[in-house]
Image (spheres, helix red, strand yellow):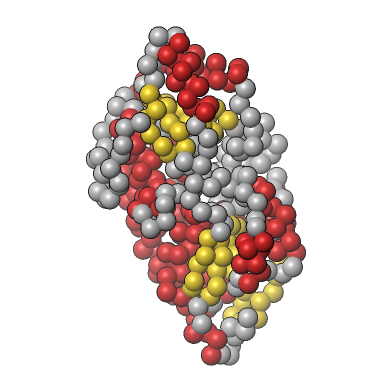
Amino acid sequence: MDMGKDCGARRVGRAGLFGILAAVLTCTGGSTASADEARKLNVVTTVGMVTDIVRVVAGEHAEVVGIIGEGVDPHLYRASRNDVAKLQDADVIFYSGLLLEGRMSDTLVRMARGGRKVFAVTEGIDAKRLIEPEGADGHPDPHVWMDVSLWSRAVETVAEALSSCDEANAAAYRANASRYRGELAELDSYVKKVIASIPTRQRVLVTAHDAFGYFGRAYGIEVRGIQGISTESEAGVADINRLVAFLVERDISAVFVESSVAEKNVRALVEGAAARGRTVRIGGTLLSDAMGASGTYEGTYIGMIDHNATLIARALGGEAPERGWRGKLAEQKDR
């Protein structure tokens, strides 16, 4: 695409990751304008959390298409032929990175090797702020969006990436990002407040897989996942039994399922606790690796985090508005 830009490729990487997956295309502006500058960028993204922040930052200057929809597990997702065609036609590609899109790795590698404009939104996050779980073979936990302050840094990365390849609209991208990061700062404060309202002994989040490590660290809540950071890992009977014993010992009142992960292991916890004379209920469905339905408040990044924080706080005995931070959450149904 000729947008009056002269783009040259360079590869960057993070220690412990596939260097090639972090490949980006850095664009430098040319001096001549062309009629094509008025054409919107064709941007393709992976997971919903990336899609949403790119749409906010791009505003009216890009058509943004996400290929991994709501309720879909990105760890297990394989790109279809249609997905590959969309990626090949894109002016710019954004993905989360840190190996979140595990089974799409080969596709992303090929795109980077072919000189595509590929940006990992997590690339600008200080490596010292990443969590490296035990037994993760040197790979950081990819679920950084669970810490709003870290994901706000990804918003800045998106703005700079778009600006580098579309200098004509750079001011708009940066202004959109600045406004959005202000909203995220307010959201971050809300999450801290409602999670802190949970009684200390009950401040434990038990979920289907270990997607809430950043959430736990940022907001002061202990986190236990049945599976590891990737849903490709398997939970055994011993894992279930250990968590059941923990629930009984701590007298935890609720555990949580996730929209993109099968419920069977969480239900096994509930049944195991019942066999020991303790009632543990399912507190609701959290949005972990995928946002809510498209077109809903929960289908935005802000709505996703609002939903999670509000649901967790209320289920574990804390104080939070029934309809969340902005009063926009869908009415919760008892499970």
